[in-house]
Length: 343
Ligand code: FE
Image 1 (cartoon, rainbow, N blue to C red):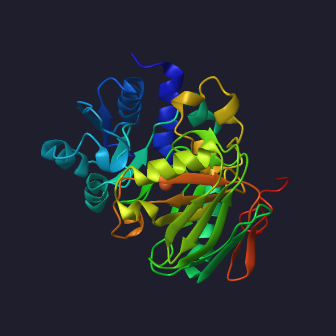
Image 2: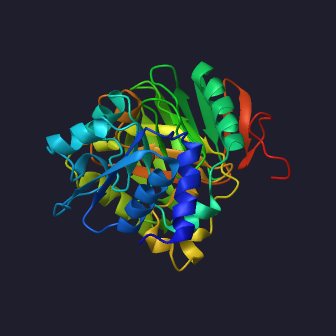
Image 3: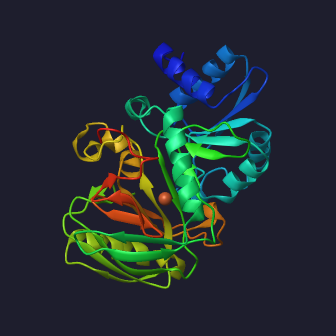
């Protein structure tokens, strides 16, 4: 039996996703992982008067987030989820062909992999959505994104080739993907459109390693590719080894770029909370005023790079401008349509 409080939390989330009586909610999970969430979704859907199905697959040895997922080749499972109105993904289809097939069929999809405490603390709001959509309008119209930092970052992204993705923690539009929780947005540059230097500074994050960087890493970026990773610390070493390990030159491509808007995200959570090991690092990705830099694939934004190597790297204290208009200044949101009073 699902915990009453957890069912209530999931019901509130399904209501934000505008699940209506008569709709179908599909749940995707593997093995017994987050089986309590699956039960809570089924119970919450029933309370709303929606029907629900649960596609539970065996976790394959060595499976991982995104393109390495355990749903690959499972035609019946994919077809069932394509027919749902809302799919709750408890597994992590992100960046995969399977995810794109399901959302292209019209299902809206919500990724839910963070611990309950994080789902609760960062519970989404319609206000957060309006701020993310204001950012989307600005980012969609921009041609040039420029980032600097006190540590030496100075990099330019030429924009216009790819779409903008928003995340605000719920989804009520046909075919739209989101993740609960987290409020931020991003796009990608033209394939050859990133040039400059990124300095990953002390205290910035390396995800999915779940580490705070202890010594600066200096990346040289030319025509959209990371061409040099400099730094004496263990973090630079791990980054070099990891990116090389795929034997895939596309692992060195620069991926999505954007900034965080979530006032309830905590930069310290990953380093101080006893339950941090259950988290995928959504606090860092969504943190209010961060710049989220990343390397690897761009299929989610309409590109062709589907390398399995993907690093998300939240940077603190940066300044980011779109066509010269300041959006983030020294790690604080300054644009009036996205700024939250008192932050
Ligand atoms: Fe990412």
